[in-house]
Image (tube, rainbow, N blue to C red; front, top):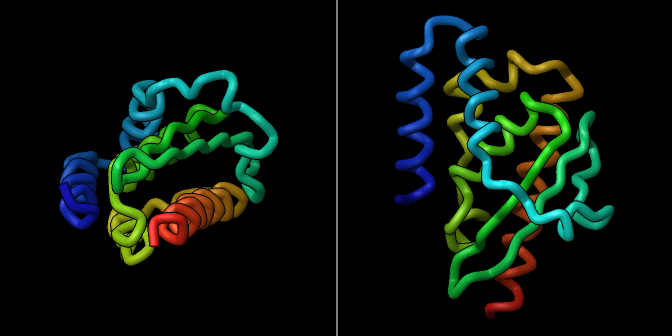
Length: 140
C-alpha cells in the first residue's frame, strides 16, 4: 500500500468514531497492538527528543524499504507512534521524504493533543524523516 492509501484508510476508520473519547480509546488499542521493540534498542540514541514521554524509535533498511520498531512509556503516545508506523513502515526512503502527512489534520489529531504531545508528534515525524534521509543518502 502507498502512504496515501494508508492515510485514507486511517481517515476512514476515524470517521466512524463518534467523539474524541472513542478516538483516544482506539489509539490506545492501536498502541497495545504495536509490536514490541527489542530491549537492546531502548537506548539513549533511539530516544526521540522533544517528546514529553519516552519514545524509542529504531529503524533498519530491508532491501529498498525502511522497517521501524518503536515503543513508548505512555499508552496514548504509543498509539500515536503506532499510527505513524502504520503509515511509514515498509516504505521507501524517498516516499517517506516526499510524503504529505495530511491524515494528522484530517482526523483532527494535533488539535486534540496537549501542546507538549503535539510537539512530540512533530518530533516523531521529524525523526522518521531523518532516518529516511540517512538511508536514502546511503543508497545513492
